[in-house]
Length: 166
Image (cartoon, rainbow, N blue to C red; front, top):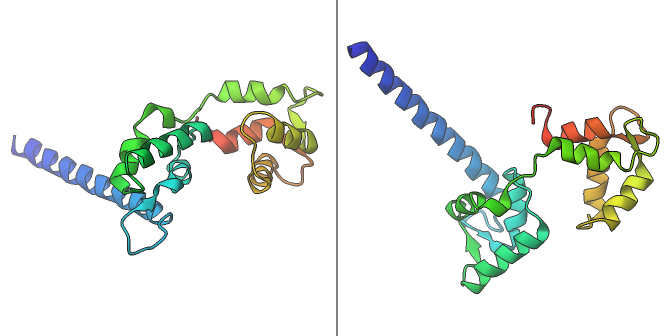
C-alpha cells in the first residue's frame, strides 16, 4: 500500500514537472513576439503569428475578425494566458486533412507523377484562396523541394507541412 502511495506521489511530481516544462517552453515561444521584453504581453495585431507559432493555422479572415472583436472590447494587449484561451477556440484548429491536402495539390499535377511545376504552384498559390507573400511562397516552395529538385514533390510537401505521422 505504501509503495502505491509513493508511486502516485512520484507520478504527480513528474506530471507537475512536465507541465512546468511545457509552460516554460510556451512562454519562451510567446516571448519571441513581444515588442518589448520587459512586458508580459504582445500586441493584439500579432495574434495570427503567435497562433501559427503555436501550431495553429487559422484563416487570415477569421484571425482578423477575432482581432477586431478583441480591439472592440478594448483588448489591445494579450498575455500568454489570453493566447492559451484563444488557442482553445474552435476557429484556430489546424486543418490536418492529409488526404484532402494531397488531393488538392494533385489537381495541379498534370503528369500524374506526384510533382507540381514550380511556376504552376506559384501561380496557384497567388491566385487561389488567401494570397501568400513572396517570402511565404518561397518558403513553401522550399519545403516541397528535396535535394536538387526542380519540381515540388507533393508527398514531401505534405509531410513537411503536416509531419510524417499526421
